Length: 242
Image (cartoon, rainbow, N blue to C red; front, side, top):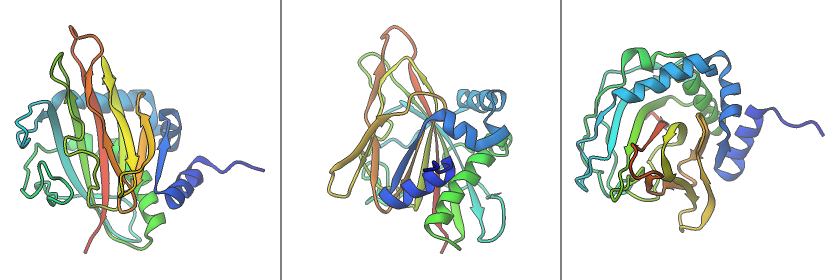
């Protein structure tokens, strides 16, 4: 039997079980020229310019981030970047930080327009369109850096295992520096574990059908307590526009 091409396998896994996991080499291959090392190095370097998340209700200063939003209209190729706006999640989806407008620093223009971002947007849109054809999409881009120190772990998902209140979520690893922990968990609504894995290498990725499954990440800590430690991740989400 002939094996399915990677993109067809990805769509089948999303349709069948509500999530998919891709090794970085496979995702880079799906991105074509945008997945080359030079383009990804430039993209990854932008994580050095994130700003502290000042909206952590737990008082933590362990998270840095930038955000952007895009729109994609049914039948029209590409994503159009929107005016900068706050990120909002209902309390039901984020019991720690939900219920308020959170104004984070904007993704830099050249980063949002870069080849890796545009290719990842198209890949994720293909998944969203396959699940729910003919929809207009509101897309958010989140650059996260989680810091950890000896005796002060970092929390990639301080709200716990959760839904994001969107349709499709793409989570891609950019860098793990001197870390232990950071397992990604996928569960059903009853909390039954469906998968547990660790995104380790650049572009290792997970995609989830947010209405069907929940996801979260365990805390991270430094492998060497004397050295700097961080976890850099890109998150893209697609939500049907009203």
